[in-house]
Amino acid sequence: MDDDLKTIVVKHGLMSRLFSVIGRFTGWRTGFMISGMIIILMFVFIAITAPLLTPFDPTKGSSDVLQPPFTYIHIFGTDNLGRDIFARIVYGTRTILSILLLSTLISITIGMPLGLVSGFFSGVIDRILSIVMDSIYAFPSLLLAIVIALMLGPSPLNTAISIAFVYIPTYYRMIRGQTLSIKAQLYIEAAIASGTRTRKILIKHILPNLLPTLVVIFSLSAADAILTEAGLSYLGYSVTPPTPDWGYDLYVGREYVLSGYWWLSFFPGLMVVLLSVGFALVGEALSDIYNPRR
Amino acid sequence: MKLWRYIVLRVILVIPTLFILLSIVFVFLRMIGDPITAMVGMKAPPSVIAAMREEAGLNKPLIQQYIDYIFNILRGDFGITMAVDHRPVISVIMERFPATLELTIAAFIVSVLIGLITGTVAAWKRGALDSTMRLYSIVAYALFIPWFGLVLQLIFGVYLKILPIGQMSDPGLAPPHYTGVYVIDSIIAGRMDMLVSSLKHLILPSITLGVVLSGAYTRLVRNNMIDVMSQDFVLAYFARGIKDRKILMHSLKNAFIPLITMMGLQFAILLTGAILTETTFSWPGLGTMIVERIQYTDYTAVQGAIVFFALFVAVTNVVIDIIYAILDPRISY
Image (tube, rainbow over all chains, first blue to last red; front, side, top):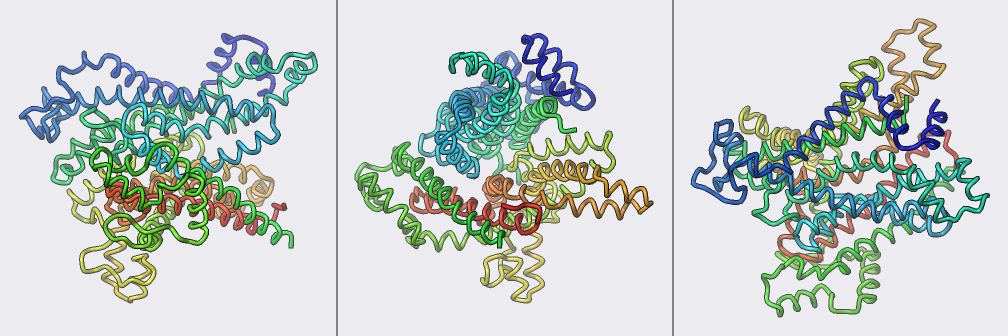
């Protein structure tokens, strides 16, 4: 059944591919996919419409320090400098999503071509690349990100670069594996036999078939990348204050939490978990559809 | 005899991996920027920075630095710390390492226990419970450690006041130093009060890290159990009317071996989690050491700790591979 589906997907265009995917959303997959998408889209919406959602400036303090949450004015309360926590969370969404987007772009631009070349040509390059990537992969990811972020200095772009570096091996490994399995299929062999140029095979025949894999890796590694970003900024190696950032806000609030001002850290941290769960739900549903186990 | 050949081969094969890991650390610490300037920031005058560069040996040619770096590590010489105490880096690392080991082992036990229970339930019952466990494994992994730790500290430390929220033991109840692992040291010292104190301090950090890691085990145990339970011998048990519980135990035993490979893969994640857990619970391990030393701009100590982490991960992976080969006779190399 699966192999049949694969050939159909390969033969027809994007539309039929889309329909065949939608047809496989059954049971828990639908629930996971929908709730994950709702969470992600909600945060994207918040990031885009940030100024409309809150009248407060996320970086400007006021005399209303440490106000409790769930009041009409400050729904999540205020922090030690009297800043509205809801406003900081709303603008913090922009920080984390833009870093996520940027780091993903960097990871894909480097990881995908390397994986493609490695998987298609095999040989010495493949072996060397594999060993190097596996070594990076085995390294504790947060530590790697800390080292790079430390050397580059704090800024959103540098944070994105250091996070991107952590996930290059993930993209590389998955793309390489997928390329290997596509390469073994008959139509690629036919293309090679009929003298199609290698570049054309790579770009026209293999690359489009990598897209589903790419979406799956993206949503799974995004869930992880969010935690890495939050971890980096929690330890103080991401953006500089007063830029609103969930991980950093959680860190700053920690001092006050144990005196009973729990909302300073609770809400920013909750957002990290929520956004990460959103991506993980989508990733889980998609990966089960593309690589069904049972 | 074949097994021995495999072990020797596996140990030899780790050498290139180690070499690459060490080179990666070197490249990241020296090539991307000037580490001293990066750590000091713009705070120090150029003459101080120059002096620190001299002390760290950063004014030599890059090739010379690289050769020195590799040879010193091979000799077990990690340099002298540049801040606070000016001691051999390796002795600082060895002082902190037992705390990290204690935390990671405790967290590991917690995560495997949770994984075994949730995974078995998911595989045995299937249906709605299966989806619930799947959801659990996702949410557990996404629990941001500093946040989850803080919530536990709030509930059990601040409101219920039944568990301590930081450090490894109460003041005055730290056991004498034998191994550095507080639980073991308390037992060696034969002091019940010390043991209780260190166990109490271990609960929240190990649950925090253990729960976050358990998701992966839930999934793995579930998949293995389903694999095993679809095999003929299990069907034969059912046919003979053997009790469910007995069949479950038999399946579990067979589902256990792949867990070991998973441990190797999980190990890097475990250490990443340990860094965040340690800072959240002021746990005096390697993770907090790195964070502290970065603040002190102690370049040699930071480099030493990172190299140590890299070596530790590589060696652990080899050990796990070897254990796997010994336990599973079906594998021949």
